[in-house]
Amino acid sequence: SQDGGAAGAAAQLSTRAASRTGTEAGARTGAQARAHAKRDHAEQGHVTPAGPGPITPVLAGAPVPGITPGLGGDMTAVGDSVMLASAPQLQAALPGIYIDAQVSRQMGQGIALVSELAARHALRPIVVVGLGTNGPVTTAQVHALLRAIGPARKLVLVNTFVPRLWEDGDNQVLAAAARNYPRVTLANWFATIRDRTSLLWSDGVHPQPPGAALYARMLASAARSATATIG
Image (cartoon, rainbow, N blue to C red):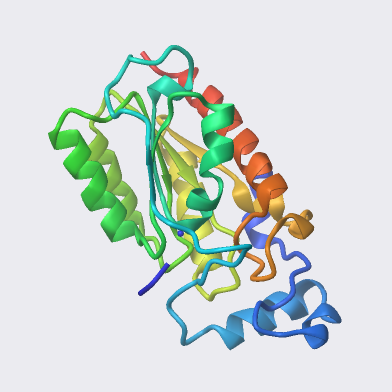
């Protein structure tokens, strides 16, 4: 199966060890480390979660708008294993948030889920999508998300930090969407974590609990920015 700041952050490279290497990877820094990791994984389509134990899907919060006071009660979040690893911290930072996060989820699957929730009138005013860990994200898919959520909702797109060939392209697409559409806000995970990779597990992708807390703060900040233009 396949598993999901500064305006110019997506073009910058950070220190990261390739997930399948040991002490050798620890000696690589900056562009060499990320280029090596991307070459190593060029033919792999999945990102295996790393951590103290197995990660299981989470479905949290009731997908009914308005039942929970505060920002979290206005949010529907759809994501992959990076969001999944951060779910407890998101629930603490944004009480009442509805989270549907799953290992191996790709953008196409996320669009289908968002469309299903919309058809059930179960989407909240702010829709968060954190996908891209597992594969390319296209401009057409962003357009499909905007159609699915309808004109009255805000879309928060979480970009990606992953040693795969599609990382740069995904982040460029998501940054362009935030620039081009007033109701799209970028949650810049790449810029947030690139200089704090010690907060990730050994795979260099999934956040440890302190990294998950950082992810939650980043997302809460992006959601507050998104509320400024709701209405």
